[in-house]
Figure 1: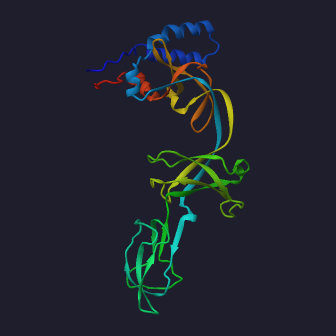
Figure 2: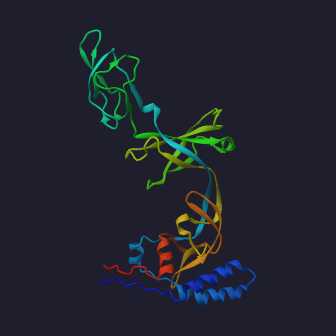
Figure 3: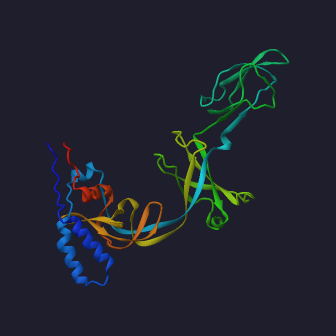
Length: 316
């Protein structure tokens, strides 16, 4: 059965522009602002059924006080956890007879990586992995002469990685171990969270930065060593009278709006924004505690506002 969507977009842009004018011209009479909003806002309401809300991933929330975290943004890089890295050297000098593992191969503790013919006994022995992980370096080929001082393989357990950030001097006074850090790399990778576990006690002489480290679980292997990331460290937090998720904020005509629910549907309400956190934004004017608004999926209503084509061609 073809899904029908009750839409009343006639006059919606007019209603939005009227609202924007009211938001930008506080000198207008309050009564006139309320009358215009009441008369024109209902004309532009976008109505969605419960089924449509679910289909388009639209989630509602009630405006309420919240907490905004202040953050420091730091550049960083994913590195192997050096506590889980094994540098494999041969037990005896000799000639390499075979190599059984390459870079990227997964190994278990005790697996043979290569075989070497001892120069002393002329017997062949296996060079084995000392831990379970992945071969990330190989410095050996068949026929080479090796010594006990030469590293043949590096094996790393990448189920947990280090994220090393570089903090400038101005940031160090507000950074401390135990703070939460939001880690992002873009390129389709989801954001991750970890805690600061270590801050270098010295500042590098050349870069004038100190290392700030977090330990990040990596069971799925998405966080590859060498990947550049950005970290936002929560250094403090403040309670605010009203906060909404960042996903609730849409921009229409260069003005931030929140889609607020009323008896006729959802209307774009211009808002004034205050402090911003990693996931939440303070709203200082435009909506009130108790208002029901679109917390997630607001881009769907923005598309309806701009194109008037929400759901066309869909069916159930």
